[in-house]
Image 1 (cartoon, rainbow, N blue to C red):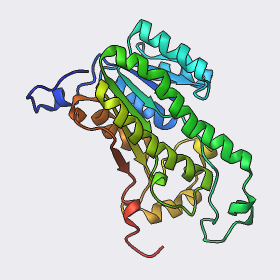
Image 2 (cartoon, rainbow, N blue to C red):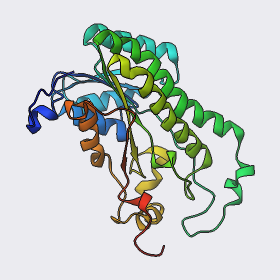
Image 3 (cartoon, helix red, strand yellow):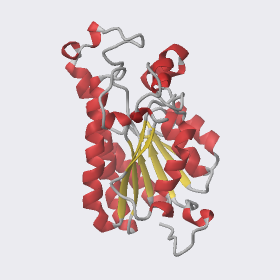
Length: 277
C-alpha cells in the first residue's frame, strides 16, 4: 500500500492510484459506486458479479482498465479462481466485500400498518437461510479467498458493506436482513483483530437505505422511499455516490491506522428523526 510518510497533502493521503482493487457485487448499485470511486482515481479495478451483461456494461462505463469476472460470491471455488486470476495479473491490494441481497420488507407498511405476511412467525425459514448465505456467507468466503493474496502482498485492505441494520432494530426492513448484517458487523471486528498482525486492515461501511436495484429497486419509488426520508434528519436517503468518500478513505493511506471500524452513512437516521414521523 502507498505510504503517507509525514505528508498531509490530500493527493498523498487519499492516493489509490495503481492499487489493484476487487469489488464483489460490483456490476451495479453500491459496488459499482465503489468501483467508480477507485477507477476515477487511478486504481486498477476488477469487478466480480454473477450478472455477465451487467459486468460488461459496468466495465465499459469504467474504462479500458476495468476487468469483469463472472463470479458467484457464494461459491468458494469460484472466488478462489477469481482471486487467483487477479493476483496473477495485477496482485490484490484492496477488496470490497460488497455482494448482498435484501431480506424483504419489514413487519409494518410505510403507513404504520402491521403486515401479517411479514410477521416474525410467518417468515419462511428458507428466506433466512438464503439471506444469511449471501450476506454473511459471501462476505466470509470473499475474505477467505482474498486473505492469502493480501498476506503475500505484505498487507492490504478489506472493506465490507454492512448496514445500520447491524446495530439497531428495524420496522421497514425484514428480520433476516437485520440478522445478517448483525453477523457481518461482528465478522468485520473478528477478522480485523486476527489480521492486524499481517498488515491487513478490515473495516465496514454501514449505510442506511441507498437508492439501488436491491430489493427489486423499491427505493426508486417515491412512496416507498418517503418513510425512510422522513426518518433521516437530512431529509433524504443515500445514493451510491454518497459512499465515495468513505471508500476512498478506507482504501487509501488516510486510514492507515484504522481497523475494525464502522463508518455510518445514513443522513443522521441513527440519531432519530428531527420531527414526529
